[in-house]
Image 1 (tube, one colour):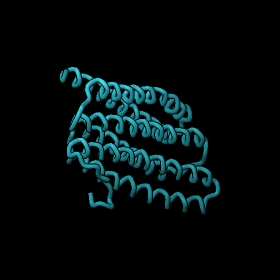
Image 2 (cartoon, helix red, strand yellow):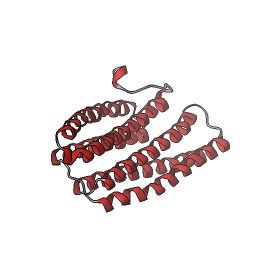
Image 3 (cartoon, one colour):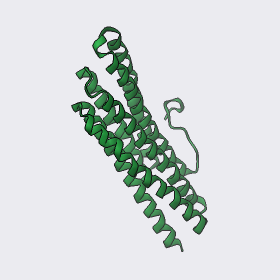
Image 4 (cartoon, helix red, strand yellow):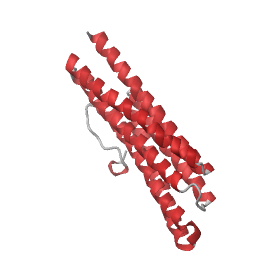
Length: 222
């Protein structure tokens, strides 16, 4: 019976890895579409969201079935609960990748600022790193790695603030780039929220390994 439950856990964890890989690929494609001004590439990201949503539903149903059949307790129950939360955060990360792609699609033909586009690309890479590192920490049940991953989000927040200020200045002095700049403010926020969900996944690692619910943020010194 224990072996059967472990097999179900392994199967669900493989779905989580698949969701993480897809969310990361979606955001990478959205940022590449931003760099190249490829509206069609952005549309491909939007279309890919159906698959990640389907996998999310499979994980949710699978966890419920596992709990009903095996009645896990202790660490096993925390693992089952965490799988539900992690899959939800990954589904949301896919949504933010789609939101970013929608901004790129709408602004593909706009006059843009090359330097700010590059900075947004850096922010996108950092946000992806938070997400992938958090899932890696979850798969290894590594509390220290999870806490380190959460600290990486500080760089994403710093870039968000920097880019926002520079976009506001650009919008105020360059009318030709006004609409692009205001759209990129929204894009930057989508990237920031993508990374925030990575931090939420890191929090689930701490919950599974210690049984404590924590908030990993600059406010609590982590």
